[in-house]
Length: 133
Image (cartoon, rainbow, N blue to C red; front, side, top):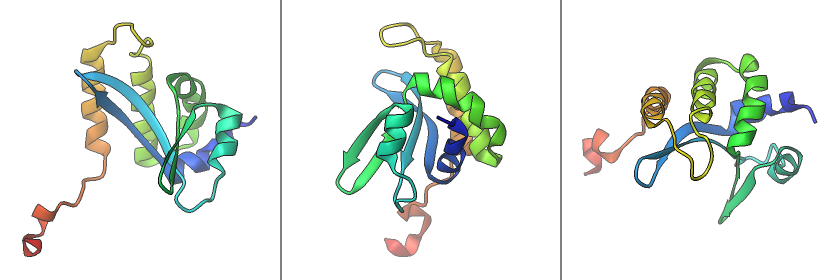
């Protein structure tokens, strides 16, 4: 098992973010969607862990906190640009999450969530184009 093979997967297919769930519960998230079938997500899941979510024809490989803590430190030095910055933020966030049913450092997670949101690509909305109305 060579986690460096994950570098291309992360660079090409990953969504790296901090999500908010329920009543302001934060959790770091690494999700890989393979739309072009370059990678066998089922094989990667068997090798590294996490779980697979299928919705219609879309398959998503979702990393758990343990995977984030184990593999991101090995991968981050090889990433570039915004992907590297987001991975570093998510790794910090994973250290603020202590497991299900245990307290989170919500102030730190809120700050990290704000930092990562600034790195996310802006969405194009209909309101940005008045001729669509």
